[in-house]
Amino acid sequence: MTAAADATESRPVSAWAPLAIPAFRVLWFAQLGSNIGTWMQTVGAQWFLVDAAAGATLIALVQTASLAPAVLFSLPAGVLADSLDRRKLLIWGSAASALIAAALTIIAFFGALTPWTILGFTFLLGITSTLTSPAWQAIQPELVPRPLIGASSALGGVTVNGARAVGPALAGVVLSLFGAPVVFGINALSFVAAVVALWWWRRPPQLGLDDREPFGAALRAGVRYVASAHLVRRILLRSALFALPASALWALLPVTATRLGLTSSGYGFLLGAVGAGAVLGIFVLPVARKRFSDNAVIGVSALLFAVGTLAAAFLPFVPMLPLLVLAGVAWIGTLTVLNAALQLTLPQWVRSRGASIYILVFMGAMAVGSFGWGALAGALSTAISLAAAAALLVIVAVSVAWLPLLPGTSTVDRTVSMSWPTPTLVLDPQPTDGPVLVQITYTVDPGRVEPFREAMRLVEASRRRTGGYRWTLLRSGEEQDVLLESFMVPSWGEYRRQQTQRLTGRDREIQADARAHIQGEPRERHYFPESPPSHGVSTR
Image (cartoon, rainbow, N blue to C red; front, top):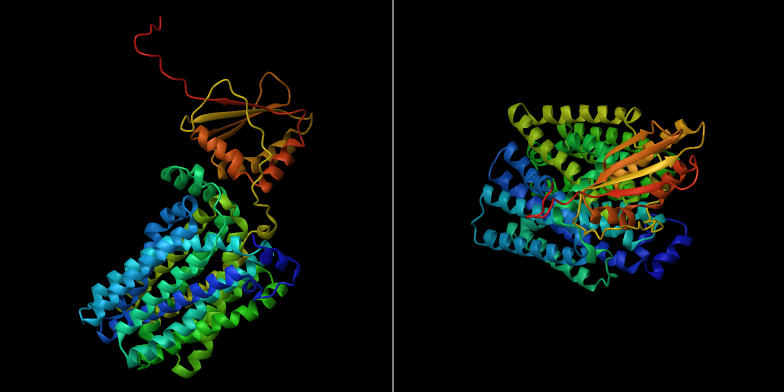
């Protein structure tokens, strides 16, 4: 971490504090410019379909085409971001986006665009965005100290939602003056600017790249971690509950523009109102989070977004705008709380894979929702579809009472703990040898068996998060107060990673709490598959 980043820890935390760090500032502006270009491209694509009278379902498919790659490629993208140098991955991904956007520009310039062509290119740009999104999220804790994670997450929301305020309005003007080819060309240039910024960033070498996990093993390890991490699972649930109904507004806002008889510039103002609200939320949110809990923030945000969705369904242009601004505040409120909670919860070794699963859930819900709300609008009406989404958002707000974000996210110690003993073996196992059975024998203090069992429940979750499976706790039939912990790991290499790369300060606390109830040191043993006898050797 840079000296400038360390210095910020002693300053009062403000919404804009991360921008004092040069690396964060340069990459933040690069992301902002790239997202402005992306929103310009989105508006250009949607308005092309509006002019072509493509219908509500096909127009809504623009959002589905841009988000569907998250469902297909988020998990592989997370593995790549944890296994490869993230800076290089971002450079190559941004360069690929620039080439795709340039090809779309050329096709549009020669007048060869069709609705399905533009959907295809939108899908391709969605793929490159998906492949880089986990890496963008994973580098944020590298750019700022831990106390600024919340502020950096909010500013990360500005790169999306500030772009939503500027990009559509700018696209509307450019479309009316110069046409779609110029809009798509600006998007291509924005990716070139991101490549330049990433090339300028002199990132310290990424640790762990010399001991990469095989792709399949890394993928399974990421899924196992999320499946066993209660805090992460609840964050994913809250993101899906919000994204599914919230997608209706984004998918059907172009149709709302046609209901109001607006031009492309007017549609840009509708999107710009939501984006302006998101930027306003950067100032409002720190105050709200000091006075209210994160659960209250996401509950109220769902209600405000419901109001904006209803406004899009029934209100005229002028009274609709301030309610869309409130929807933008609500959008950034929800995303900031969820993103900050996720970044504070995930340890370094699985940060990209955890972020990729978050993107898969959120964007996947948006993609499915966009298709569903578009189909409902085509079958019934846009107003009915938006009203139904608003009703679901109200239910989402109320559900915070019984499905809240779990406490403790900001205080969990996720730094890697290296103080784990190296076992002494009579074998010389290879990293691929396995599966390995690990058995640990504990002699529990008399009368402390029940507290020990309770503490071992957290140990079980820790083992499963870091690569273990088939975990059991057994009690000896011959020795009083002797219990045996048993679990499997897929290979010896996976076990070594568990001990040296994956266990965190929180895992150390969990094991210390359990061992506070035992006598002496536990006895750990490791068992490997027995090799079959060699050919020609008698087994008699």
